[in-house]
Image (cartoon, rainbow over all chains, first blue to last red; front, side):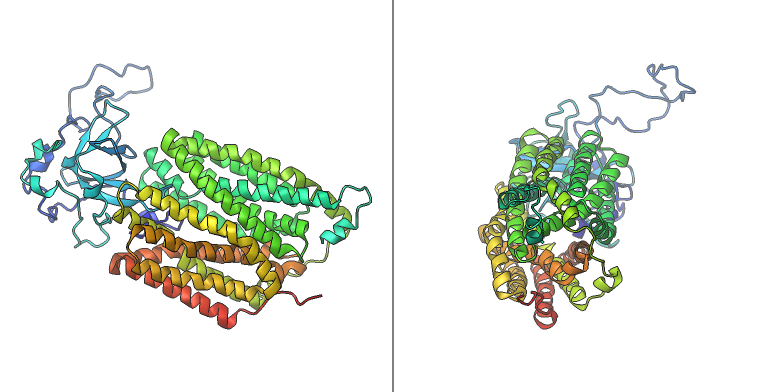
Amino acid sequence: MAGWREPRRLGSRAIALALLLTAAPAHAAPGGDIGGGGAPGAAPPQVPATPELAPGTPPAAGTKADPPLPKNLETFAPDEAIGLLGKKVRDAAGEDMGLVVDVLVDSGGRPRAAVIDFGGFLGVGSRKIAIDWRLLQLKPVDTAMTVLLSLTRADVQAAPEYKPSSNPGQPIVVVGPPPPSSTAAPASSDTPK
Amino acid sequence: MTEQLLSQTGAGNTTPADASAAGRGLDWLNLFVANIQTGFGPFISVYLTTQGWTQTAIGFALSLGTVTALASQVPAGALVDATHSKSRIAAFSIVVFTASALLLALWPMPLSVYLAEVLHGISSCTLGPAIAAMSLAVAGRSAFALRLGRNARFASIGNGIGAALMGACGYYVSERAVFFLTAGLTLPALAALVPLSHLDRERRRGRKTPARREPLGRVLADRRLVIFAICAMLFTLANAAMLPLAGSALTKRAGSESSLLIAACIVLPQLMVALLSPSLGRLAEARGRRPVLLLGFCALPLRGLLFAMVTDPVLLVLVQVLDGIAAACFGVMVPLVASDIAGSSGRFNAALGFIGFAIGIGGTLSTTLAGWFADWLGDPAAFLGLALVGAAATLLVWSAMPETRPTQR
């Protein structure tokens, strides 16, 4: 995509949606590396289903004396969930793998892929690459290493650049697990040590 | 002009030594301003990403800066023309840089980032012409080409040092620290202005009645200026996307050393500019502007062609030598041709702003164009497309751009 290469220009990035809420439910399995059925929803191993809008269960906290205070507030511990945008991604060896710039979710609200901005120097020459969500380990507790990617640079660097669906018929290309372990079940594809 | 100033030494404070102190001030000023501008480069988008900004919001903020800069080029130039105290305008612009950098560092929130982008866009447009005007005052018309060569040398040294410094700062300290560093670097830039501040006073004394300015419209409609602005626009259209595209190719092809190679792609041309600019200024004075222009413009399509063919990462970096040649020629020629055309009209800075406007448009379109080519036909085709635009620019210079060097008096 044009805009990723040199930010100093008109409206270039205006195409990038913050969260692609409509991530093509029908033709969502592009390379066969994403499990077909409803399985991917169960994928993210480390993140408990926190930021969902589970109704009911009014919590105990939130007792500041401000105007009306809605009744349906929930809480979770600060280390249970994090904002993902802009978090640093590292591989198993701790090498810098870029920043999370976007998350692709399907119609059920389940994350399918993370878009990372990878490589470059001082913002020049970086590439945006979409990574299968199941290859990411999220560690909200550990602020130094929040996102762990079970791929290496070599797996990622040559992948085609992620392009926000400019053409509706075009599949979104995502980097999946390395070829040999393609049978790995969604839930157990943590770290191929 | 300097001769005029020097003859004016009633109070004895304008000696040649003084002029060279001003010269050294200009050297440092160019170095530190280039340093600062590195901080306002594409790194802002990395920083805002780490602050949890969405790509849409970042794109908007950067576009805001681009549009502001585009819109204020000519008015800012005219403002500098109309202002007596160029050093004061420069100082003011630099202080605004300080404010912008601090806004970015302290409050990476939408409103302050937008404000920072707008402030930076405007003050870039006043600072560039102010430096050019002070250079003209210090060197005089006869030595202006040499002065510009020297300016370009120090600016490129500043760019190189800035890239290294800020790369290290972002890597070892934090993304945010880069902007504190940028703000800090405005202080030595201000200090470099001190030996230049007396220019204004003498200027006022030297020329009690400012020469009557030609109407802005007539200066901007000068055929040579329009042709040169189109050439500059095409040059930037071909040039601006090449480095990011090559950097992206390096990220694709090279391993963990790719960041270092991209850094080399940025620094190597700066080194070339630092080495070449003074000789190019001399060449422009001795042989005329056209040879230098043609040299720089020819390097551009050649570079695109080589980028399209070369795949080896190290060779890719070496192709950037051509970037250095082109940038050196272009950097010296833009203010020089502007002064050739409009120097005596009192509209030098407006003319410079006009060319800057054309350059801004070329830069804005460049990445869009290259991105389309790259998406449809691949990187080599994008490089070839850019080379083609570069060739068209060269052809236009060769066929339509007249020699602007003033005839020997």
